[in-house]
Image 1 (cartoon, rainbow, N blue to C red):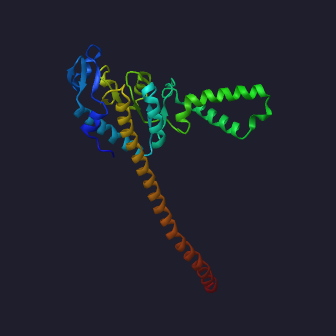
Image 2: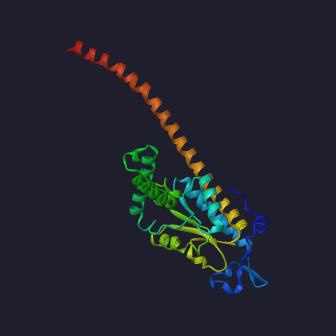
Image 3: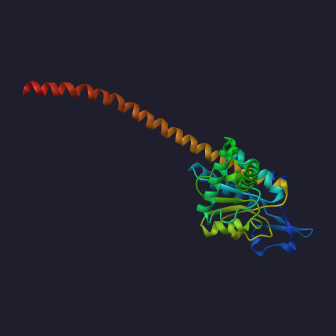
Length: 268
């Protein structure tokens, strides 16, 4: 996994918090000092929390489970989408779809519907309809695709959520709590760190800070997925080897059976 250094966190601007009058008292433990009315975050604690988050994400991915990346704010959406796609992780970057976790069965139907409509359009199945009906269907598909773009290949609910701005994405965090899903995310000085299971204290507004942390989490997720794929490949190879050993034994047994039957007949 990526090595996190205090120097890199500093260069990324992770240490800048909000104005002191906008702070959340629970964030006190992460605040190093105050300078020109701005709270400065203790990067040593940022480093520890980020490393803990990376280890957790790696473990989840290495067992074949998923972490959902959520970053709908303007500064975060592009980088979250880019890194999630590279890591093969599901994501939300336009808006959080209410009920995604608490009403998964209903959401899954919408996802399946979106995939089916996309397939029908690609195969030209809509050509039997009048032009205005085709346009309606295409418009509806675009709307669904925009909402579910990052989760169209998700077969089951994620086991955890990684959110870029815990305060902004509180609807997602709240649903995660209701469904007992694990949560981790970037927590600035204006946010209660107790809202998530792993709080990464850092600047959640600066592009540099967001980019550094999202990349680190995404790389850990990708490494976990690669480890899972290797384990599956190894298990498959072992199973094939076992089957290959069984085949000669079966063949040898089938050759001996007629002789044994013949011997029994002659004795009678």
